[in-house]
Image (cartoon, rainbow, N blue to C red):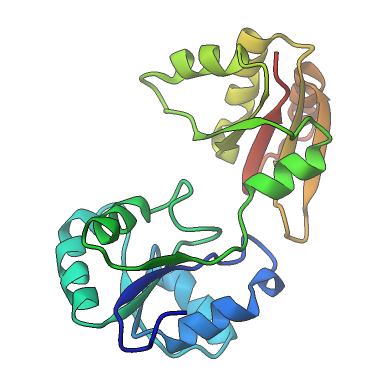
Length: 229
């Protein structure tokens, strides 16, 4: 760890479900930095209160990060130590974090990313699908370019991973069947690390039929793991 008087940025993963998944080091860093940047301060306050963390909190999200980065860089150059957290998981992985990290690198400000929670690894590890080589896609485009990406992904020889909203899960399964075929093996991982954690594996057609019969289960944070061609 760098000396306390040297400005730097910490990317701190937060639990994706069970609060017990946070690391001791993450709590230590969040308590010791000068300020914490959070994707949603309402969610962050609940986490910080649970672990008795009283560090000053500021909002940092996709809608304001372009405007605030210059000032944050100046503050770190003056010695301010900043921690960045997202709503859940590791900052920068389908969450704000890339822009400020890039700006720090350009300004030669030290950046440290703590290891910790992310939905990608638990999903592929528990899916039973090949994980020696995989492609992480994250969220697909909602409209423009969506079919192009699906066509590309379904031709990959290795396992690929998607993040998806429960509101678009059935649509996504239908599209995957269209491009990959109904017998392609997959696993829908839902509510990882939470009380109602669920892994539904089988052919894409089997999985689609399951969620059509059980619409009450189409909810929560969703990761879709699909086998390669």
